Length: 227
Image (cartoon, rainbow, N blue to C red):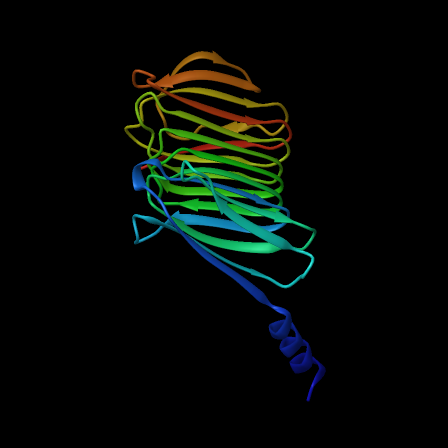
């Protein structure tokens, strides 16, 4: 038996999974995830009354806990140093609070509030119809694509990565964009500019009802108009 096959079998033998499901009220569903390393993927599931948690890990140093409090909020927390990859489905209106120190955070097709933070890695948010989004990373890119709701608030920040936002052509928002060193490309939106320099832009599209804030220290900002 070749060394490659032995290595593959050893990897399969040490891989472990963690699966849990919690019953929740769809209208008030909340999920918090704290991960040390690995990927956190959260998407809308077909079961509107369940949060379903699946993950995979290969390091026994990772300890995973999943609890639900009296108010129905579900919290998943990883202790130890091993990487854990989560694949979680939630009711589409769920509110999320996601934290990872290294890896990636991916959120798709939700309508609840989203807070995502990562120290080293990327954040990808797509297909959202959320009234509030906060995405912060230190080293990595932040990518957002979704609806912009009236009176909504959308804050995308990366210290040393690219900030990339794709908004509908008819989005109604006030923009605050700031890039100290990487530059900005604000795409094809026809906006009214209150302030415009190489590092800072304050402008509005439409009546400016929603708030969109894009910030990076070392990276670049890119704003795209979705047809």
